[in-house]
Image (cartoon, rainbow, N blue to C red; front, top):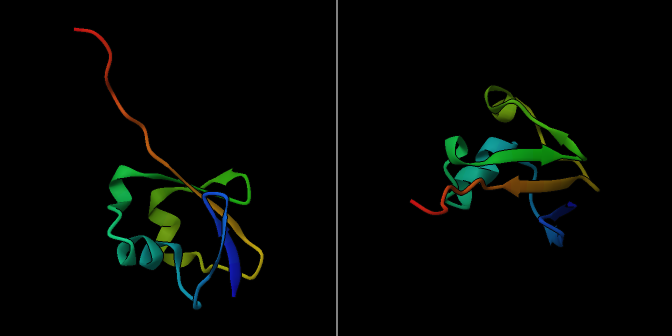
Length: 67
């Protein structure tokens, strides 16, 4: 199925968002996930299956700045 991940059209097999993160070596605790413009709860990731045409964004928050 075709989905858009971080703005890039990709072909993926049927999978949950949690499994997709794991396949990409992304630690679910370290990323926020937006599906079709809606931020998802981390505990829901294993239960949400990707569907044709979905748009997924992985959002990483980084600390930093001056000491």
